[in-house]
Amino acid sequence: MPRLVVTAAVLGLAAASCGGHPAPAASSSPVNLLTVRSCTVDGLAARCGTLIVPEDRLTRTGRTIPVRFVVIPATSPDKAPDPVVWFAGGPGESAVDEIPSEPPGFRSLNVHRDLVFIEQRGTGESNPLNCPPFPGLADKAALAASIRSCLAHLSGDPRFYTTAMYADDVSQVLSDLHYAKVDLIGGSYGATAEQVFLLRHPGQVRTMTLISGSPLNIPMFEREAGNSQLALHYVFALCESQHACHRAFPHLAADWADLWASLGKTSWAISPTHFRTTTPMVVLDQDWLASQVYQALHTGDIGSIPVAVHTLATATNKAAAWTRLKDVFPAGPSSGGAEYAGQMMFYEIECAEPWASDQPTALSDQRNIFAYQTDLELAQWMQYVCPLIPRSAAAVGSEQLTVSTVPVLTFDGAADPNDQPRNWAGAQEFFPDSRDVTLPGQGHDVNSASWAACAGPLTQAFIDQASLAHLNTTCLAAVPAPAFDLTLQDLAGGG
Image (tube, rainbow, N blue to C red; front, top):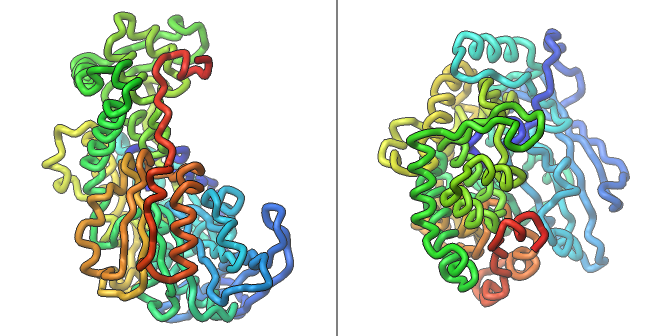
């Protein structure tokens, strides 16, 4: 759940236009109609289906909507009865559309178990609630008008596009497919959705694996600035622990402090004449640096951070230095306001649900952290937008964690700016049969090498045994260390 920069590109949210047409009348499709057909998905034989459900699950009246799903059957005749169910991230990503880019090594779980992908209402082809991108806070009247215009033309009532209503959709699909117990796996917001599912349908859960997530009782967005700082300090310490990296950048923390202070005093205005392109004038400031570092941490591409920080901090010609780094630390034009992604179910969830609390006052003790200003601006954005979003407390339901004996395995990245290991401190109060595993060198996204070396085998063993009792985490030592770029030639792929 990246939050430092809220743009359609960063969030991966499809900002399709509503088209300005009136909302269609409520569907006349019969509720609970299940259709399944043979299909091919990502080159694999599968079963594709749709379940028609009431949009308003509280009264079960009015509009009906489709919920799309895909089942990839187990490849072995020796099939376990419990499938693996994937919860996508976001909020706003489609579990079905994610199949081609599913977690690395996920297919190994498919030998003895079906893989089930159920699309979240409001995404993909399950009655998506998309709007044109919203303008920033600079023009509040235009922002409010754009949100109201979108709401007036949506083919759905956003109040019912909460995580709880999605969890109930999933439960019904699984029941109609005759799965009694299931193994849940989710990443980022998907880990949040898993916990909501467990609260609402505990009898259907056999095991739960959470990747790059936080417990429901942790206001993760209000911790994000501090977590970003911890992640950056981890990268600096990791570089210092590696002889070659430390030798190349012996004063990395000081380089960062100098660079941050320099950009705080005077932003760098760089003309396109410096790099012989038609790119507009760019301005490099603290917001730009914070965004670039956050993105590198989030994606796990931390190998470029030391050389980029050192090069920019020590260069006498700042324009020339950035020109050599702009492929990994890009910058946009200096003019123009921010555009915020227009996916209404995203705003519904983040405005209505307690775990997504993002109050500006909660950030006051993080003022000296590099991510503070951008996190503050986002919190201010949400504080203005959320009162404009219709909400239903009943459709959210209770998100208060309760004690569960379901076995829970969690993975977090040591370099994750969103969900640091500290977020899981004390979680055993609610999940007494749980274990948190920190993946060295990982950001928010788990890379394929780390999954293959350790996270994948651990997940496989955990699900097979439905137990943490004999989980052997010595494979963490086999997780490849990040390859830090030591020179600009390395960064360009030439060294």
